Length: 398
Ligand SMILES: [Zn+2]
Image (cartoon, rainbow, N blue to C red; front, side, top):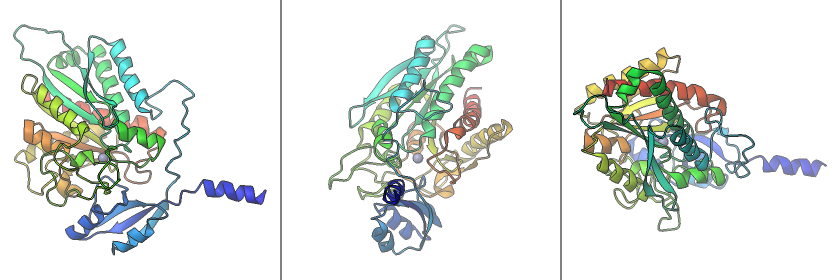
């Protein structure tokens, strides 16, 4: 009996742990970015960054020659392998597989065929479709109206940031509810198309359910046998510049072999270009976790964007709406100076290409649960995110 119990205890311990690594200079940040250790935060940050370190990776951590301390153990990273749904999918209380998320959007499309359409905008490396769902009101109120403008909402570019998928479904649900309830809102949705991409990175997302809960990148097979490109370092604006990414294929912030080298980022690029200029892109949101931030361009340089005051005002109004609605307070700021330089990110490309005020929203929490936000946090996170989104929408389409 004693032997059997010992066996159980071993099986429940992964040996992985979170380590806080102290980085004080850009050179040290680059050294950490170039390592093949798993990043346990959105970005490398100064003066410290948390990393997930496996039991056989301690020599690599030590060889970085940076101070570090162990923070906490990590549960087995493959514990979702035996995931079986026992009830109907409820996106406000459960995280779902890719099929659950797309199924939820198909449910919206079936219930509101006039207000919801979809378009396959690309195919992932492992041949999964990448979808964009359009929510708008096609019923014109007067003649000679200008064509509706576009807002692009990206979810799950980083595979392990599951709460991002939840807020995509919640925003769609709230848009449709408000269109039912409010003539003013219905009229607004005649002037704007909200394009929601439920899952920018379908291969990586499924991999977090089947193999590794902490997977971040896509599933590109790189030269050298490692896997994955960080899709949020693969956009063209500032690609590979200023230490905001890595050219090491095993790094969690590997930028790929060139700008837009990945089918997943090509899909968004080509889709956005197809909207513009007939349905001009006036806004773009990219939902991530964690840290509770609203971040604006630039990410690839510490220079200020010419629209910095406007971006700050939009983000500030969003934060106010979130707090007034009973949500948590989020930190607002320019991405590069609030976290650290990140180059090749979505929002830099959208603002450079379309002059759209792209914002990166880092959802809950501030680190206690990190990427593994408990299901009880889904609904309160979605509610505050909707209040912020609705503020963004009404600022751009009064
Ligand atoms: Zn992210």
